[in-house]
Length: 112
Length: 113
Image (tube, rainbow over all chains, first blue to last red; front, top):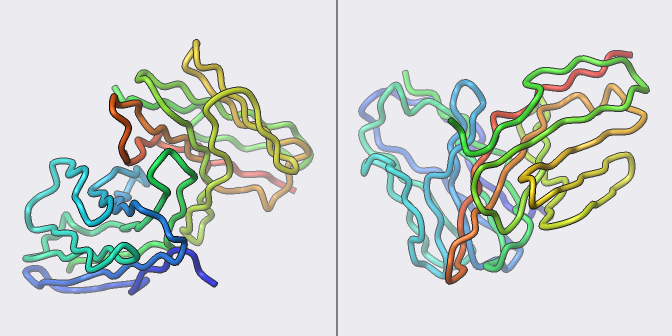
């Protein structure tokens, strides 16, 4: 049973399109995150959601919007995709008070 | 300068060698994580530390809070240990709350047979 699952695993799309990446966790965690891994493999936080409330938004362009329909899901919507958005996006979850983090398998987004 | 610095960036060793990867950080933290990323891309949590030492199989992680330093050791290394090892910290904030992780740039480890 996969703890944190995200779909799709690969996404190739043209500039200007709008796309979504879905994430679901079955661990009962309170907090979910989106991280971006750039071409140099450096990971950086984009968003975190705690009980459906946005906690962190690290200077991410407003073309990116997280949407959480419930505690188990945190989807990432991206509008007007740009070439520089090409990266691997990881969803993760953890308990509220400083617990281990669990990561999804990543979504490799390629904008052409 | 990154808040989390790892060394070395790249490490190639022979099977059976004792491996050490170092991590230094510059902020107050509530926990430090060691993560493993295989060539396939998935990220797995190896350890979460707030003090002392933890051991899991051939892996040992230590942390010195006063010196803001952590090490990951691999004993009797094996080619299947080849991966990127990433140090990440959860910063300490007053009032608690959920914070994301701040990552080092990773150490690319290759163990040759």
